Length: 456
Image 1 (cartoon, rainbow, N blue to C red):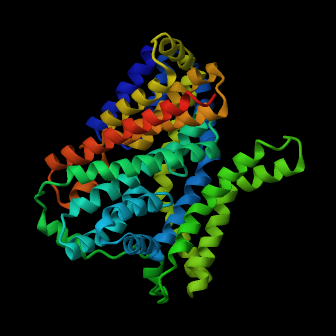
Image 2: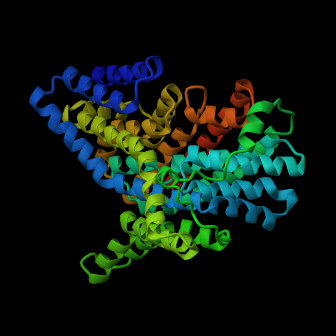
Image 3: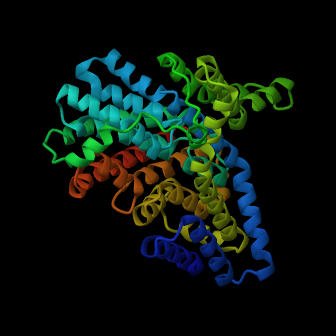
């Protein structure tokens, strides 16, 4: 137990004090914990490789494919179409609600930081046209994207946590999509109360952001001088369909498989078609055709856009994999079982432990992904002793998501991206963004706790 506490302490010091890259931090801490626990030196490297291989084998393709879909949606202008059409459908009075729903949809395929940068020019335009405060629109929309990032695969934190504890991603989506949507809607109402007052904005930053492009053209296309052809904006329902297609396919496969004999041919086919890798691969191909080839892009241009998504998520994939290394070291060294016994004797329900531990790690080191993968690695041995069914394993992963959403403050890159791009002060960011993420994270946990009572 002391080894695990020392390891977590070292992790926090390296990340917070020395700003060391999380990949290096997790590897150093894993070796430190292994040596401190007395693990044989010749067993440490095989344990590192096994932990990395197990985690990466499950999530590397999923995260990469999700990023590819998000990149095509981004470059094609699909995110702008979503937001603008929702505004048109909801009317002027409900623009913040429309943008919140747009944030929810955009947040599914697009990483949080990229999403905020993509939508900021639109938010400035809406603010200028309506002559209303920017925060009225920016706060609920950006928090919605962060909520999706914390709760739902294929985002790296939830995807890695599900692998660590053995939760089914289909069930996480089946429970998580309505929970996340509920949290986003509540966030809209709370944010409307928070943004009634006036904010002091940084004019220089605001003007700089308002001139941003809608999306970044891949460097390979810029270098070749080959511009993407002009084409009409993609249809609203096409973008919605491409975003929802893999989610529906995965959820349907999980539901249908319950009613099929496990040894039947149809069960095997259902499992193959609804696997996250298969669903996301099919959606990537569909997105490439519908948003690229059908709109005049060449095969080379589609390939370049898809390929440009991978470098941006490579480090995220490595962080998730190193989280798996840390978790496997805890198990192989025997520390995991000691932690399990200690936590079991704490008297706290395991669902509350998942939320609280993830919240603490999120608050002290800033990264949602690191908090989720570390929490899952620490709690995996304890969770395994309870022999929970697939429903409760999914709810446990979502409870961790509640902790990962909470307490976004000055050590979180997302906090600085939001405050700097909106031009609000750090104090206003703490009073709005930090408070709102914490309240919504707790709401997400309460919702999973309520569902826990009805699902075994």
